[in-house]
Length: 228
Image (tube, rainbow, N blue to C red):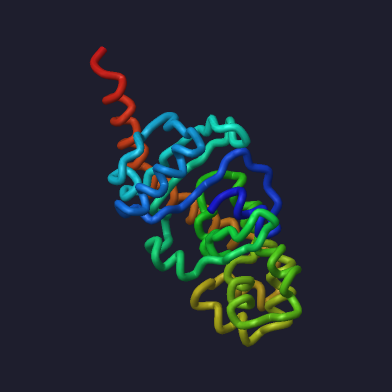
């Protein structure tokens, strides 16, 4: 669900860790524990590896020691801001075949949503992911792909070009993304400002989502530290 997924979708990103979304039920967490044991993975930082922390939306961080994976960090989560539960995300997943076998990743739309964070590096990645999909499937133009491009492209010139080519689809998408009115009008200045406002709103939503969770993490750290 992180940098490795971006690589698989063609939005190249160098990543030293692997971010994984899991189903946090008892049976699956037993399987996860067995996999982590095979990787000789230890928890680093906080919180500890507890189901309740995963359910709260916190990430559990591991460092692997097994040969072939030594030094690799694995971050595990069970809940993502702005996205539905694991079962729905699993139904919408993309299966990508590699030389090492099949890898299940978040759907492109869900990955883009997961990348709408406070982190500066995530917004250029969103642009690359959607532009790579447009370049790869631009001629096919099925309804789902067109909707994704219109709702998630972040480059004004590409949005204007697509809206001009597909005005009916762009008008239909305006209720979901009002800034498309500027794309249809060919107003690059207004569109650029609206895209910035859209990004700022998502950054603030992410900040508000994580504020109480960061407080919880700090309380866990203080609890581990013990009394002065």
